[in-house]
Image 1 (cartoon, protein in one colour):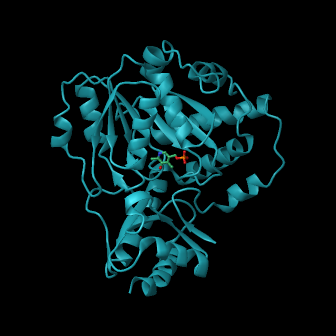
Image 2: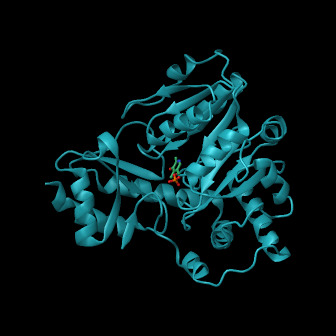
Length: 353
Ligand SMILES: *Cc1c(COP(=O)(O)O)cnc(C)c1O
């Protein structure tokens, strides 16, 4: 089976080796050291300064999105959400459920987020921006510098869901003055699903988290940060995925973070170059290196997904909702190479007639 999905992704042999081992007990100095080491490397790769902290949550990415909202925002906030697809809409749902006032910039499929759109929200008293920097459902990569400037100008917290963008696109936590970055194990890190991490700025910890009542026992960041000082978590963490994580972070460290992002970009560029002559369209908004959405001109996208899976053991990412029959997404995350993309295109060609 070959996965061109956005998560889980094709895993690396080193990770599979770690995941096959007996798990250790975790309330030990040895395990604390591993968690602290992972915190250090995550901050290094996100280009976050020394004062930033990381919380490790046992949940999928959505849990970390919700946890970030309830620990960093409250009913006195006025939040702006970039809603350009299903993940943006999830942030809206989370704020609605937790009664956090928000407005959303709703983008239709194919619509690019522009500076002039953003400008209309200047000076309206917003306190925080929530954005999925790669809106994975459409592959649109929102310009982080543009959004950072907007937040700075309006004195807003900059909260970034980078779940599919971390390790795929050029993100600089401290330089872009981010306050929170949400990461998950099953995307570019290519690990088992179930572990999420949130990198937090000192400003976020001091001005928000320390004062806000999260209303949650399991997802209380104050408790996580306190335990995290000694490399521990309040409750049993995803022990196995934390070990996979540490192994992967050291692999990335050997290559270097910039080189690692370049490799993802290379896979994206390569795939986009070899489909030029196929009856396929790529949207013309800026794309993340993580994924290429392809609009199928001839044929039914979902049927193609099923055929590739059933006949060839190849899994591409189908879309949900209105785009189900029109759009497929091809991931560039995980253990994939040029040959894998050539093979995919060969198998796709006859289905596009
Ligand atoms: C994958 C993803 C998530 C998390 O989804 P889960 O299914 O909860 O892991 C959140 N945001 C973005 C942008 C994603 O790509």
